[in-house]
Length: 221
Image 1 (cartoon, helix red, strand yellow):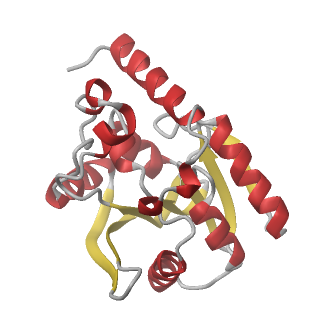
Image 2 (image 1 turned 90 degrees about the horizontal axis):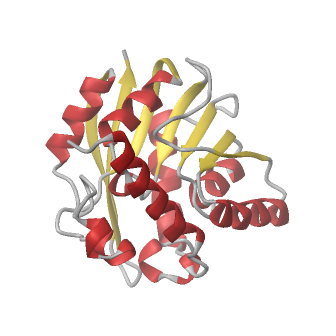
């Protein structure tokens, strides 16, 4: 088990990597500019949450704003957090250009500052694999979620080696889900965090821009 100082050092190294990433949106694998990816996520989340504009949604680890912009454009009330100022500035610029009202805050997604029961839903995309402590993070997400609210996240594909690809082998091997995650393990972590009715949902579309994403979702008990 890593000490708090070890985790702090690891997290600082990861933050530096994201702050230095100037070309995230240009990577095809990130799907930021993929209309198919936007369609899959938009339809998938609206099917789970409904389309009420009164829903207050927290986008965890917004990065350059893919989910925040997508859901904000659909009329949801969006708050977006990330700990990389560089990434968030790009998200803010895109939101301003699109005239989509989004509340952005720089926060550590494993240690949120929001009050208990603040949001109707929590969403995250391409975040679980980046976490140094997925269990602690999940408990924080559930804490700020109102009873009956839903957490929706994508599960990193097993063998994806995302940690190594993005951070290098030394950092990547220290991340619990740096090489993907067993869905059953994520379901167990979500259950321990206080979620019930936990299920999986596959988002997939064939074609030239073939995208496939496995979502996990559950409701706060």
